[in-house]
Length: 586
Image 1 (cartoon, rainbow, N blue to C red):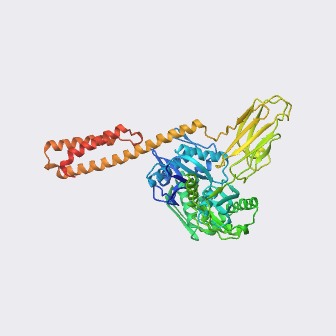
Image 2: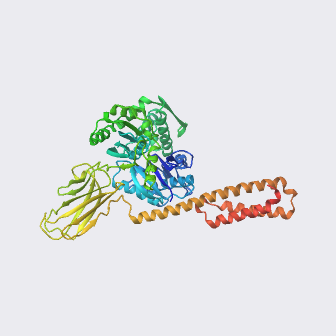
């Protein structure tokens, strides 16, 4: 049985972990870093790049580079490149495939199972989209786990003493706060709240907008109209944010940013920490309401918290840390790495699901994890009212049934509109699916008995069924939301992913072969120039002929259209040249 890996699929960076010798360890990415940029790019020759390689070429290939796709999960967003349409699930799958590959190289064995984390405030469609992305990447997703819960799991493994912990998770694109109780062998989520569109990307945007304003005031040029310049500005904004986490000012310098009437224009400006904090003040303030909401739902005061854990790279911003201290009256704990703890917690859960549970420090029994749903679940009833069946922060898994009736006389069918959210009216909540129960016995309004059942699994994914108690007719939900991939689309994406992986491998092998052949060809040609006079005429003629054959093949080579047959021809031509050029003793 192979290992179950834990994946933190982040907005800005992703991270993968596995349990080795009883301890969760981070698997380094292709570049050797502990995290992998959540960026996918398609080069002009058709090669697919993921992670650091995609990030490095973003300036010169802006329109074919995709970042922060996590913010689009569960929406109908898509991008068309080279005639192919890509949805958030397929782009996310490419990132997951890279993490899977990194894990396989690290472990030296195939990896087919994973636990993937999501923001606690992800709704049902977003969770299902994440699970679909895992399937497309060739992973059996054993569990979807909330990011704050995963972080607490990582923390609780070493700190098993009974305490209530707040996990304040501010990543690249999402914000979550969870109140978690760590007891003897039990990690129980008491409440969760958050904002799916608040994070470090928004901080970067504020700096970026500031740079555009200052540049325009100085040079009377709108940088936002220049795509290549904006890519460099975006990178500089992110770097300035990171610099200001430890320094009082950041020097933003971009030479030759663009061409003006009188030649190249350079960008050179300084952003102070005070200015930065002014730019993001309202964003930091937006974290207050979810914190208060989570504490209120958990029924505790901030003074009862034993620890406050900071998770996500954006919690390194001093203004964020100051806000946490002001809200809780506590110094945030520095016992965990904010970039790695989520992936480690997922790896711990994956290891547990394999039947190899890890004991919590100080506990006499193995770990028990109790998570909650982030948002209430309802159905739409007469008058457009959202009638709630499952309250937010209910412990998972859960199942709840309630009997409804018809609103009109002699109805033969009813539409069940499933909602997620906290508002009293249906229109103000997110509709996550609709289905129709047919074949109801004709009867006056209010007579038929229709039992609606909500069943939520440990991943927080919902199944809804409706049953006519008189006829026994039953129907389960079929998600009709436009932003959900169909089973056929998922299967097609899985096939495409496998084909793409094969193409990528073929291209890599082709690039290695042609580079090697080109180097050898140059060596032979140089050796002929310096020592060719000492060879017999027939030998020299054969070497020149073999050089010409290989040169011709290499000149026709196109990495985006390479075939196995063409590679084999180049390989044979190189071998012929190696044989004839052996007399040169290269």
